[in-house]
Length: 165
Image (cartoon, rainbow, N blue to C red; front, side, top):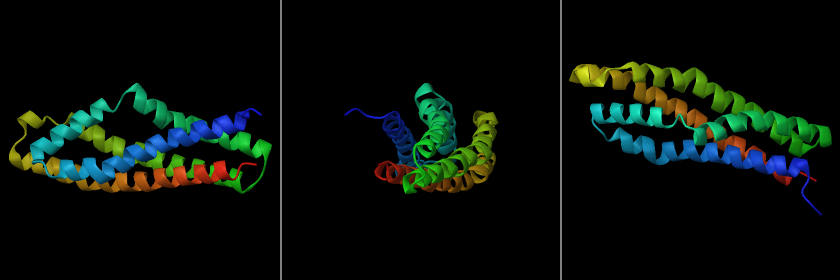
C-alpha cells in the first residue's frame, strides 16, 4: 500500500513548518540571548549581517514553501475529509499566515530594513544606542510571537497528520 497524495503533502507541509518553527525557536533560545550580550556596535553589526545572510534559497524555500503548502494541504484535506484533522490543518494555515508570515512582513521586515539603512560606521556611541533601542526589544518581542505561532503551526500540523484516516 503506497502513500496517498494527501499523506505526502501532509508530510512535506509538516517538515516545512517544523523547519520554520526550529529557526525561530533557535533564535529565541540562543541567538537573541547571545547577541544581547554584545556591545551596541557588535549587536547592530551582527543583526545587519544576519538579516542579509538569511535572504537565501534555503530560508525562502521553507518560509514561502510553508506559505504555499499550507493552503494547498488544507484544500486537499477538506476535499478528502471534513474531520478534526482537516480542521487542525486549517488552524495551522491561519496561525502561520497571521502569526508567522504576517508578523514577519508587518513587524520584523520593516525593522530589518530600517536597520539595514543605518550607517553604523559613521554613528556615534549615542546614535548606536538609539538604533539598538529602536530595534532590539521590539524585534525580539515580534520574534517571540513568531516562535509561538510557528510552534503552534507545527503542533497543529502534527495533529492533522495524526488525525488522518
